[in-house]
Length: 244
Image (cartoon, rainbow, N blue to C red; front, side, top):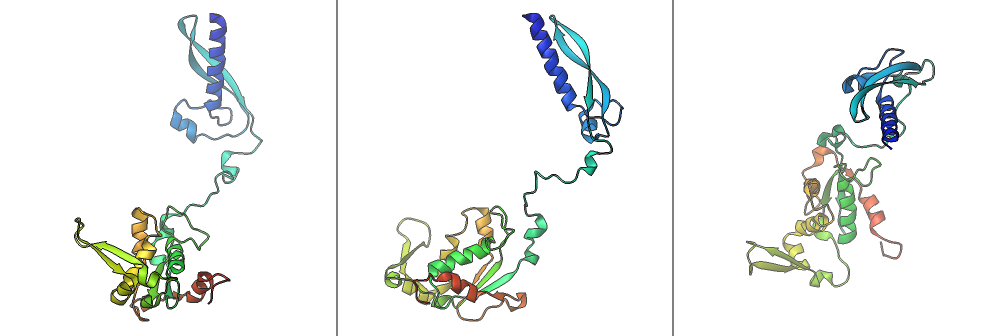
């Protein structure tokens, strides 16, 4: 029925216009979208809204709507407090400032390579702090000393292989055993293990620059005052069935 369709369309348009309007006291709301967003509620009011253009009987006619907004007396939007539905914490730019990032040092002597690498990756990503966010760099700088003293289980000392390409072309791949690489360049063993546990994207490349691995017990980062967390790492590196 055309008349029923016209009445239904008019009722829907009037309700939509009334819902999108904003009021201040008993003054009519501004028709601009920016003015409507800037307005606030200040008590109930009966306000004339319109005109609203609706097709009636095949012609364009004009209709006006009178709406009433009920707000508690003396209450405005500014006094209703913070948004309780949007309380999720998300780090800000100052939270990821490198000058505020802490430093830790770990003595890798006698620690298992795999278990050490998982904990180092956790420190780099900031997974050990309550403000951790997987999309932001909330980690620390990690300094690892005595990298030549890491251990592996089973027969990995002789059988674990490391492959690299000198030029990237076929036929130039070099294969090296764990014990040979540990004698030649022990830092690379820890670096490759930790890098494989970081995200494979821009964030992972940034996190990897915070890892400092050194052979021997000396490192050039004493000025940063790194905190020794070797005891904490050792407590998490071994299970109850493993010999400490």
